[in-house]
Length: 244
Image 1 (cartoon, rainbow, N blue to C red):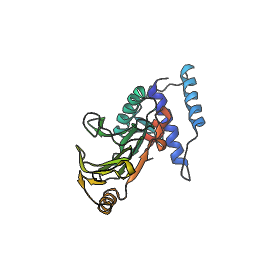
Image 2: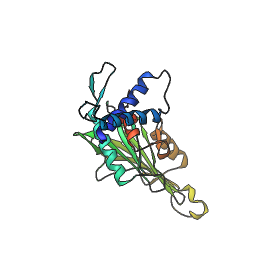
Image 3: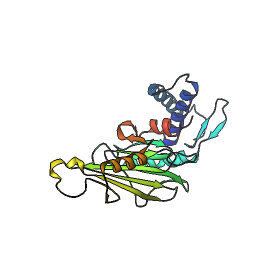
Image 4: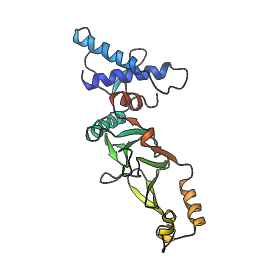
């Protein structure tokens, strides 16, 4: 079966699961979705399905009327299929980085020290990396951000040193607004130089954490372990079903 039909069926099943549930749904019934897609495939093979092939961006409401999904969902689905071909271990999630009606797409490389997180937004009918040249953030497949404020908190730690960059995205460009470095974890091996710096300037521990806490207050932490695997089902449920 072509991908467009399969995902349309999956989206419809996921949508019905959302609309019919009386309580919060933590995980939909994959068997029910698989049975629906199998039945559809069987009908096509037997020539019983008279419907024309439907674009992935369409679904139907309870009255049988065609409903066009938001175009950003198509763009994010395309990006996710592209990412999966290059890195089958990658995962994704959605979140509101800036204050508009379209969420941003977070893509996690993996769960290892060097693994970073790329953030995409919908622009010019496609998913665009918010930073130039494939910019990514964080380590261990994680970062933090301030919801709807455009603030990204990117940390990398190693050998007793912790570096944290605070970035701001204005909807078009990303810029580093402040950098924190904590060398205290080096212990006895650290014999000279500043223990704490803000933008490379030495500060006291109290000054460091007062400013750090101010800049990271009310942040949202996201990580690879909590993200979704990139497959047809999760794209249908979490992308096309977003906001349902």
